[in-house]
Amino acid sequence: MDNQKIKSILESLLFINERPVEVNELLDVLEVGKKEIEAAASDLIEEYKQRQSGISIVKVAGGYQMCSTPDNEPWVKKMYQERTKQKLSTASLETLAIVAYKQPITRIEVEAIRGVNIDGVVKKLTDAGLIKIGGRKDVVGRPFLYITTRKFLEYFGINSLKDLPKLEDFVALAGKEQESPAPAESG
Image 1 (cartoon, rainbow, N blue to C red):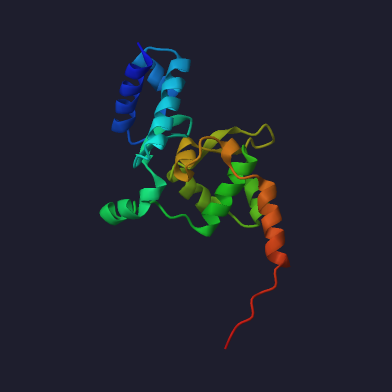
Image 2 (image 1 turned 90 degrees about the horizontal axis):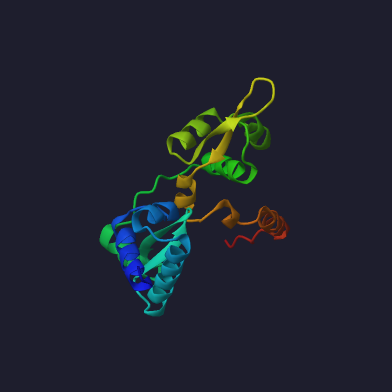
């Protein structure tokens, strides 16, 4: 199968899916090699960019997904209203960040970092599919180890955990915020 045909089929497959399509799924359907699929995907990504299309193909959560371009967001929102994405509380975001950066991690270890009980938060994040049990720690009591999920990657629009901002960047930013004097209130 030539590259043009692979691109055509790939484009159709991405169009009909609401979620990222993993390369392994594409291998099964297209019956060509991984290199051919990745080359076709790379070509499509570039073609969409060059013609300044309102649609783009992005690599996210270990797969490829077709989506609208960020430049057109105001109009997409206007027509369809913003998707009702489940809002996460500050406690949920803090817990999720700890799990993301320290995984695999036990509930007790997260509580030691946060300084509060997180039973309800863990249940909410598990129910939302953002974290899951990834095994058990080999210590007395064998507590569950929590890890992030593919849905976590999709929710935050990243391809892999390697794409998370570096923890050092947050520490540096927090240090700068503490050094900045508070703005004077005008009365």
